[in-house]
Length: 142
Figure 1 (cartoon, rainbow, N blue to C red):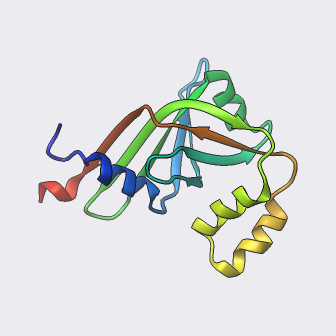
Figure 2 (figure 1 turned 135 degrees about the horizontal axis):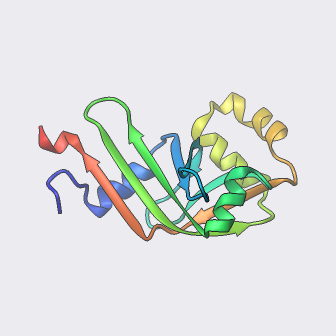
């Protein structure tokens, strides 16, 4: 293990912290799609993202059967965690899942109105149990 790599506990804690993630997924004839997204994660669990049914993200992840997600600190000391694994689709998520994600990223005052506006029957949750991890903590080299 590189001296800059995080331990399993460190990388799971980092991933569980609030970051805007970037998902990446293969697509034919072009570079992989890589876009920012809100995500949820609890140590030892699954990464999950919420998107609209039929969105480009959902279609590409469904076709590939898997995706990657990276979370990073943009301020020194730079750190990141990248995970990759198979996708599972929750075709009928509840508004509570959207609320859980929104609570990570919005103020308490913003959550209810966001969920009212954003949640409908076109919502889909995509889950992934990480199989492969990469991590770096440049603070360890200081």
